[in-house]
Amino acid sequence: MLNNDPPSGTPVRFLQSFRNVSVNELGTLVRPLRKYPTESANDQFEVRVRGELITVTRSQIVEEKELSK
Image 1 (tube, rainbow, N blue to C red):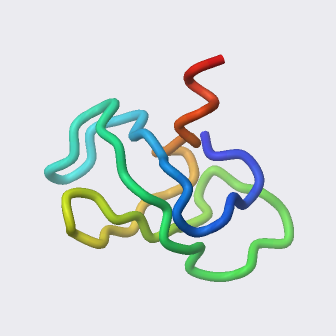
Image 2 (cartoon, helix red, strand yellow):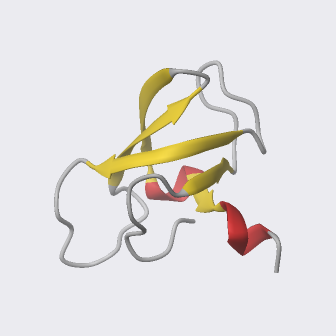
């Protein structure tokens, strides 16, 4: 799950299949859909993957560097 609210341009990895996106596929965080006062698994973000802009929830992505730890 994506922690905090990283800046636009942050690389993210998908934790589950979603539409035409595979598990572990990389994308780029574009923005949160709104300002969230507290983190929830259902918070929505726009992510660019393979040139397409899609809306995902916080629970579907993780910041790429977190998986490298």
